[in-house]
Image 1 (tube, one colour):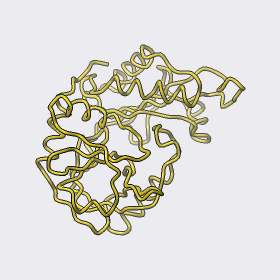
Image 2 (tube, rainbow, N blue to C red):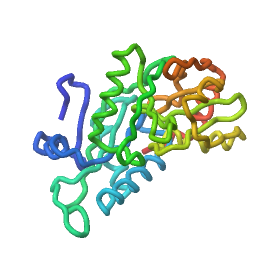
Image 3 (cartoon, rainbow, N blue to C red):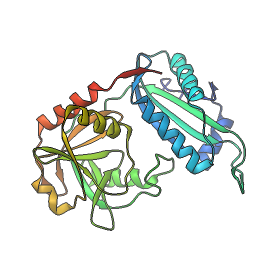
Length: 272
């Protein structure tokens, strides 16, 4: 099934998605997904994407989809799209929408949507700090209206995006991004309830291989001005510079951004 722009393609369980297929998602939205950038049928962090889908499926549905089936349907959708550079999302849901004492009734389905590749914004970015905590933050799930609301509101106020502040006064994550900071010698990962992104996972293990110091810190707004740099990251990019959170300026730190890109490119580009 194509979007009206004629560029995007969706398959469910290896077949073109119909309106009837997509109706449960449109009106219920009880689903989770992973998003990836695929180049020539290859992706970095494939093991982390598969792990994310398994873990979230078991938590939400008490079942999961075998890795081989996920990879097979990804290959089918990528072949149907015919592009060398694609943005791909894999969404797990159930068509029945019925629950039993043992969990969800019916088999799980996999929606694969392909669209033209995206590299995200160039930055640098200015983020508005807003009080918000995502529901079930450990899962990349559907139906998060608040994220889009806070993004739109931040733009109206002259910012580029928003970063969340939890009830313990900790900066956690941005709307669709993980966040990392640089203190001049170590990468700082915020301690809070956040989605542990695939790109974040790739960077953590590759920075370890490079011998770069990493620390977990509860980051508060009062600490922001003392950092030597900060970035956001997601499947689009391992690092876009943040130059302000609220009214507090942060150095652009191009060397920090370069380090994260270097670490990311060390990750093997695995054939799906």
